[in-house]
Every structure is written in C-alpha cells, then in structure tokens.
Image 1 (cartoon, one colour):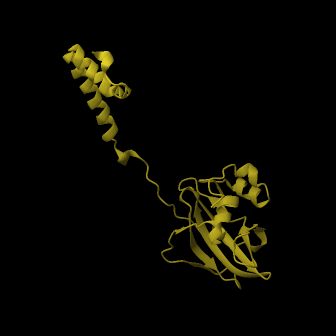
Image 2 (tube, one colour):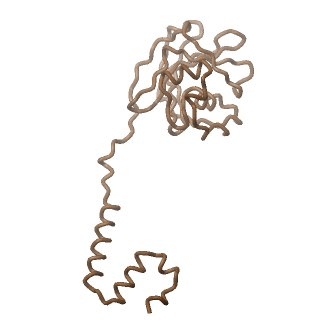
Image 3 (tube, helix red, strand yellow):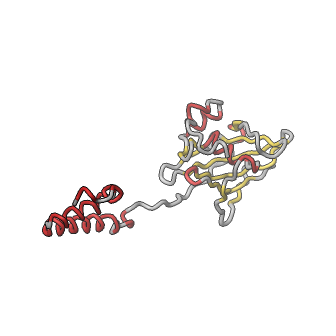
Length: 201
C-alpha cells in the first residue's frame, strides 16, 4: 500500500514520485519523467564556461609620486615607529580588474623610509609591489621585474596591509571607490566600510 511507504522515502521527492508512478502502472508518465530529468541534467552539466568573461589583470601606467599629496593612515599593527601615508593623487581603482593601485609612503623619525607603488585586490586578499622610488629622489621610479601577488596576513601577524585593506581600500571583499578611500583617509570609516568579514583576523 502507498501509505505504508516509510516517511524518509517520501521526503526524497524524486524517488517517491517514481515509486508512485510504478505503483500506478503509468509507464508512459514514467518515461516522460525520465526525459524531463535527463533534460535537467543536460542543462546542469553541459554548461559552457567559455562563455564567461574570465578575470584578467589590466596593465597600468605608474603615476609620478606626489609627496605634497600624502594622507596619513592610522596603522596600529605595523612596524614600531613607522607611519604610513597614501598619495591621494595616485589612488585609482580599475573597474575592469577591480584592483586598487596607489603609492604607499613610509616614514620613520619624520624621514621617508620607503616609497612603493602597490596593487591590492580585495576579492582575494592579495597585494603586490609594482614599482618603487628613491627616498632621496622620488622622481626616480624603478619597476619591479616579475612582481608576485602576496597573501595579506592577519593583524595578529603585524601585516600592515591588513589594516590598509580593511580600513582604507576595501569594504569587505569589494574595493571602495576613490571617494570612499579618501573619505576613509579623512576618518569616515563606517560609511564606506559597512562589512566586518575580515576585521577580526
């Protein structure tokens, strides 16, 4: 009897439906059901991934360093005694590859310690250095050969890039707009950083 079928089988809808059709002797309906399931499987597993637009990193022109446009960041988990700045004129988020690029300046004892042009990708928590400039002559820019992406570690590892990403560049896994980055540099963090998925790392 149909009512004697265990409840756990009834919960498996496709199997219960198939059993019902067999018990009713409706072979024609069973054939239609198999054709429908085959069509669904065809749509599910024959998906053409080549139609998707694959992510590709875009080339970029390295802008000049503007030491008169530095905006200080509040970094609590970086090297002792080092203060970090972003060159606001260099900050740019590319809409195609969703990478934010900028000049990062580090000062120690009031003097420039390093000037690096970096790229940061919020979606997978990575960054890399693309170029650097001389602390003595910021106009001398040198490109880094074969730059590699590096994973951003947690704040507990004193990786200051985690704070740069979480507080200034990214809103979770989404890059902020230029306006959002500038607002964060001015101290308006909450309005442009509503997510906290990485803040406790």
